[in-house]
Length: 396
Image (tube, rainbow, N blue to C red; front, side, top):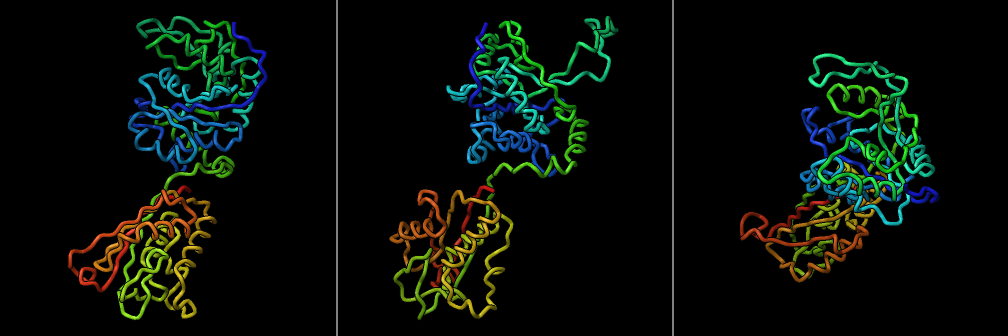
């Protein structure tokens, strides 16, 4: 018998999303639901609940490589799913903090779970060691013969319930479940092992809304539930990585200072433009605005506005940062490539990098600056213009 006298403390969550979706006919976790991948809704229910210090997501190997970095950037820990549900849980459990006292285990394909149910399960688990949400059966259940050709008996429906997730456990209880679960053997849920341990899971009354999306019909039902405005719009979004691309070109002319990435570069010519012509900052700003679908810098600083003549591109960068903040977006990294035949910019790489990092309030380690030539080809190759391409990623 496992002791249960320990008082409740910090809680962590494990979300299992490594299934193949055989009954759905495709990988269900990333199917669109109410305009977003289903798994986003599931994870968000836990990250936005305020009940967990850590959320761990078990992903199939291909999704771990494809989506894992974005989840990590969003503050969700990721683990490799195994060949079975139990193996996936075992892999994710290794990331649970030793000091955690409660652990919730949830299906990635149950996107409609709410904070009230999660909290109720945690509270019951703190008291009893284990808690499982469930609903009464609506239909009569019959036991079929081994071959499935006929019915043998009808169990008393009043004594049966359909179980759901999140199934919540004291840390030591879940550890014991995994230890008792035979190697290579799979279970449809962890509570099946509890009988071996002499522990009875507390029943938490749930609702039929907390469905598991397993078949195409389930997805239709979930979509219908999600049309409830309170369900769709009261949760805060899980921030996800978004990319943006920017491009700018300015002509080189005599009599102008050459400003690149906020740094004055010694040269006989400078960049012609309505502002200071800083192609690096302009391309980065356009990339950032594009990443949040907020247009481009010409919308906010139109070339027809004569009061902006000669404006520093640092001011443009400051405005872009304000727009990002209003959209609750944070810059992850910037990668800019300058294309110029002259002057040679390699000696200025670090200065430009530090300047860009400072202007956009980033770590210099998240900024990449490099330059290429056009090998004498075109207006850039003839020394008549400078081009910059920029790629950025943000969390939003």
